[in-house]
Length: 511
Image 1 (spheres, rainbow, N blue to C red):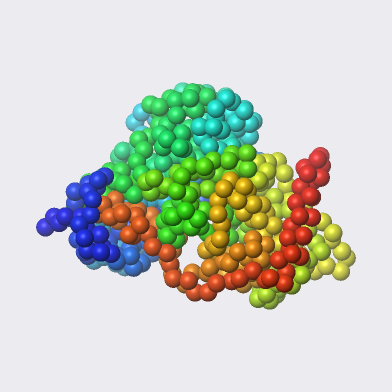
Image 2: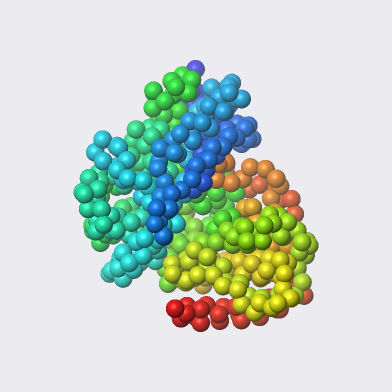
């Protein structure tokens, strides 16, 4: 029986705007797909928001030349098929009640499709820096920053297409549509070339304030609106699951596919960061400080990203560093000890700042420097220094760089009173206390449960399928404990950060 859409939290009828008709019931389930750079995670969620089960599949990026980073989109669809097969095998009854699917994807990647929908070349990923010259050229063009609300970083999508036009003109001439990684999965799921505003914000083609493709921005990089996918809000319906795919997955009823979104926006949905000032610190491979905003207030000169949120009428701003836990992973490889071993040796609580200084620019940097050429360094090394001293320096260097992002966000008008700490690095009590002390704000550690991009994608799917308001679905996780700044060390770490900031201009001048 087909029932009217409802809010699973309140039981009240929901607005049908943007919702496809389908058999949505109180027993329906929702699939959240987190498409990462190194693997895909699929989470099956019940209508009450409880995670049922998750499955993962992994793949690798190719680096055919220095600064290049590519991936075959066929790896993503194979990974999704594998994850779905595992969920069907272990959760057959729950999966059979699937009513909605949402996709979160790594941003900025360029997937180029021809007229028939065939992929023309491997996806150029977010961490690919080959188009640094094109990015600088586009960034200096009139009105580009004003309309996009952002610096044009080398990892963004538009300069990648400019690079293709110059270096792969035969392929560029065949580009019918450019989609982002999450939108490519939407295309594979529905047959429709459709993405969302949060993901499109990182292309340098979107008028982020107006939430629409910009003819001026497209023309500045040699593209047209006809080459862009249709856009919807992340919490709205993008289409329905293809009938042949539904049959292959053993599904008999219609399944709504949500607009989905870029990974950080969708992670914010999983963490319940929707209202002005809500945000999180993510200590992952890259480091992110994200704050939700009720209005569009760009400050591109700060190198802060100002993007559409994955839900209507909201935006978010974030500072991004490229090597957070990646810096610790690098040190781990050099010393032959696991990251957990290295951080555990420091104990659970911080002391005074160390003497060694580490610049975590192993892959260049975004906020606040927009510098793809800068590289990392250790300073003040002594013959007596050992693994603990190097580990302390790496954790401090990453925390100092994240303080740069916090200050850039404050300069952009964001009010940051507390943040949730997430990501693998948040498992280190030392690192979390260090960041809290440097930022001068408390950091909340959520209870061990689902709250990331996979959950956020499932929540977007539920909104799209039921018409429920995002605020009713995207609640915050319970807080396990709060880590307060060390009042006795705030001044010392503030002084250390100021001395650390002075190093960058000098290192920048090195050949």
